[in-house]
Length: 383
Image (tube, one colour):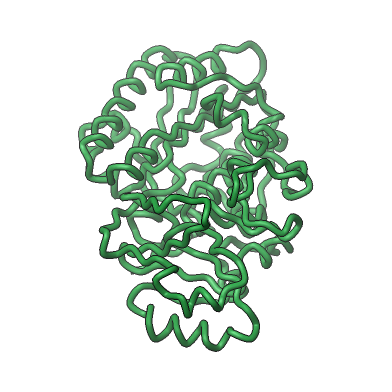
């Protein structure tokens, strides 16, 4: 079953719309059905904590006795593709890929003629920094610049130091969150700062990292999720009486992949010969750039040899159908989506490998349209 993003009130972009309007800004998207802007407007301090990889199905599995369960409002959809590289820019701009035009961990940048690792702001083949300033490649303002509040961003220094992150958080005060304790200390520091209404965005990558390495059903992922709960409980006690609205959600969930469900592009040389560029996107949704003279052969091969593995779509078709968002698309989106998009079925992944890359595959993966990847929880706590 494919879960499509619900941009008309039931997705993470609608959550950002509610936050924007509640903080005195505007949004082209509808408010969230689960959290109206009027509720946001009542609070003196608004905290958005994004727990990377904490999908709704993961939450259902581990969250029954978790402190987060007390504030659970329901579930929302991620955007498409359901990957950090598309969702974090959504949280940082307030708009989905239809407008911000970032389509996966690897993104083809026509402006530079390279496939990039966009969140790290480096090229894929050697990890060298991209030469253009971020504002030459991105034309969306930061969420922080659009609201009437004093803004803070809490994350690890390593994340904040990337050119990409720095560009989108330059309108916020950075507070260090290298550890769990440090993360909540930073959020609390933002709440306690003097002045007008405050908005604190905080990001924690631990669940996602452990699910990638060990899987969503691993003891490591469960233990860390429990650790987050203990830290959150202590944090809530420390901010009692501050009129703070704490919103907790995720960018996406993950699905575990078995070795037999890994499809290597190099094992399909006829398909590989049809492409003019490496795959761009994520292992669960790949953007393909096809040689014009090989287009028919590409389509025929996918439909005949990979029909059990993936769905085949033209890139422009998905844009027109609203997979990436609503309204007028960013002109750059058409180049970054590519000629065709392969969306993986079940728990398959499709992987290519450059000469500079090791043959590494994650256990937990994301980017596709399964319920495990697409649904995320919305937790709201009012102090």
